[in-house]
Amino acid sequence: MISIIKGAPTVGTATTYSRREIRFILTFALLGTLFDGAELNLIGYPLVYISGSLHVSTIALITVATVQGFASILGGFVFGTLGDTLGRRRTFAISVVAFGLAALLGGLAVNYETFMATRVLAGVGMGGLFGLSFSMFTECWQTAKRGTMGGIIQAMYFAGEILTEGVIFLFLTLLGHDLGWRAGYMAIGVVSTVIGFASLKLLPESKQWLAYQQHLKAGTLPAELRRTKVPVVDIFKPQFVFGTVLFMVLSTAMFLTTNSVGAYLSTYLLTTQKLSLDTVSLIVLIGYVATIIAYTLTGVISDALRRKYAFTLASAVGTIGFAWFLWLLVTGSAHVGIDFWAWPTFWALMLCAGAAGGFGVLGVWMSEFFPTRVRSTGSSASYYVGRGLGAGIFPLFALSLAGTVPFALALGIIGPVAGLVFSVMAPDRTGRAIADLE
Image 1 (spheres, rainbow, N blue to C red):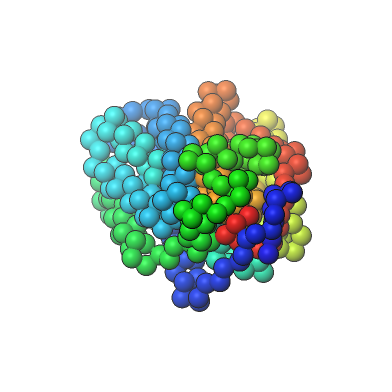
Image 2 (image 1 turned 90 degrees about the vertical axis):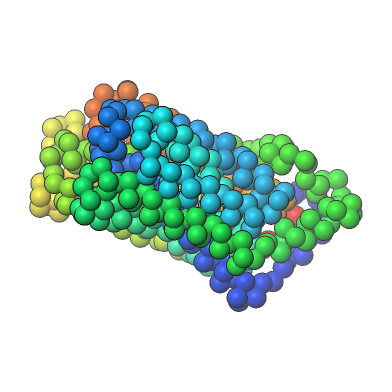
């Protein structure tokens, strides 16, 4: 029995899941996060080649990323609300099918306008994944090692980025620059769509959500536990607004961190450092592996300490990495050769990549804060406002402000510094049990 609203009656009961149900929920949370990451990297990694095929500038494609980021804000609110009103399972399926079809159609785009439209659809579709995946996971997983497993789930995001790199690299090698990125888009789109339809059949619905819906339909809920017809209103009520706003800020900070690396690293290495595609791909891959390790370690640390302290530690690592890289740029010492491991710039960039470890705890942290009735809405809205601002607006703003790709990458330091400042203020309910009525 638990109560998470100060002064509210303790009325909720925890719900148990079978091992089979937990396995399916975990599987789809992992797959959803994997292909969410794959989708987001579909612009950043092959950016140079898409630019050539569509005959547009790099800045035009950064604009696409900006618009996609705004679309994900809309998706976060829409799919977050549907997750709390229509159910986790059906909303998850719609979300995955939407961005799967967007990738498939993106590979067929013959002009910039069509490509932009497919990325808008992808952004809206991706807006549902994070909140839904972590809502489902947090509701079925017992409190022990929840942070660790949450870190592993979020690590699949960068495993997805690795998947995109591998798939597109393979097709670029086999089919050339134009057909290569298109085939990669279509392959990832087909697999995502299949996963979306499969979830309709195999993914169990949240038992806490079902129980809450029964209470809601019966009209037996006390006033303070009733969800409004528009759940977005609830997450800005007095008992939640402080946490909602801070989680939006922290999510933005993390996206500033990851997208400075994701949007500019490949281009920086290809165009500024004049490295080959093979070498660049290897460096980017190592950066992804570093990030995956950081996600998992941050989750482990969050179970040993608290969610906020693990996030703060990841932000400290990022601040060091970006400050180091910025110093190398200012002093004219930022160089990377084919023997990249021998250059300080490479190691500074690896710290920048590992700085994203804060994402390894953010999903569970937010899901533990919001109650069952608005968990999907609160988590999705907070996360995708951050994605829209950090992954959408910031890359365009950074390039315009910095003037060059290297300094635009270095401006990512804003992310971990903001994470350091605001993480210590955020509410933390590490390891609490999850009930139907909270």
